[in-house]
Image (cartoon, rainbow, N blue to C red; front, top):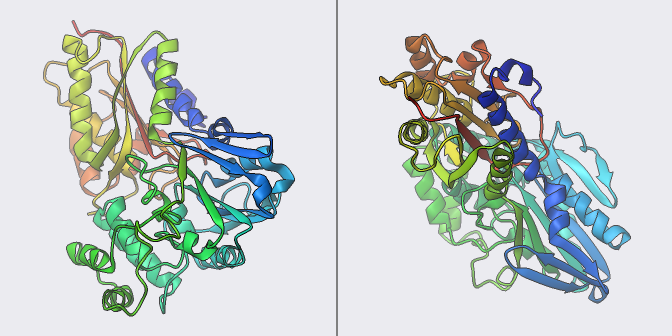
Length: 457
């Protein structure tokens, strides 16, 4: 799992942290999770997650698989294993460095797009995906596969917009620290595929969604910008986001203003028949990874404690609170008696102020290292903290995240300077603290592990 594990496995506590991270990432494997959710019996397709769908396959002449995201190929493999040659056609868009790109999984083509910002190749692939959707009729079952990364990968500029317009506004909002709901409000209203528009394109087909969630709380309207889910936001909401972050995107603003004036159709809302009855089955999410990591901790004799699967806000602000809970665990046995592993997931952000290298998880790790080193009573001296993005890429970097302890940043002034310049990865890489996995094939966002090996005496 970790290409540089030997560097990090310095103690049993470090090894437990690595094992829990690896178990969490593997636990969110999209193929396994989707296989567990599917069953084909007596000609019926059963999809069972939080809700249950039973689809009579004999009612359809064609089955299409349409979608995208970093974990999409794993979901498609599970569908292929269950449905085989019942799948007539399909297309999913994945990052251009994915091992399945430019190939096919059964009848489903795997094509390249861009992440974290759209690319012309992704726009071309999405045009072909929409052509397949447009050709669907009432005898078609369209299975939508949406996983983390789909918002950028499924690029279909609306109106007079082009890919550069989408790239610019996406990059600017990401750098400004906009959260996923704000970012998606803009992306949905600048796209022909997001915000329920894929389902509208496929109408009158029967549509069902399968999702691997990388967003807090797993709302279908937010995962991948909700291509088959109702959208409660409006053009005015999207304009408000641009104003809130003072984004200079003239072409996008002009398009949104025209939409607000009624010159472009609104995204399908909750009452729109194209999306109102479309089920979305979330086969894996942050809680999936946390539960798998917790099981690994128990196997190693550590008591797991899930703090939250919904952590959000700035990464550097979340770190001291996590460290404080770990210190309380070591000092008082609250909220759990050591040896213990504290776990959290969710989606933190970075407000980019400098030009360094890093992402939310390396920022969390560097801020955590500073917080551990600031403990005047040394209660956190034995605590090990690790944070990764489960897709293997933290932000736009090639590192998944980082693993730190109280000794990681002896030069606190240099560490503070790196954090101020958003150069968390640059600093931690120099301390052999960066974690490298390569692409993992899944994406359920952040996973954080804090190992407390025992009570502090």
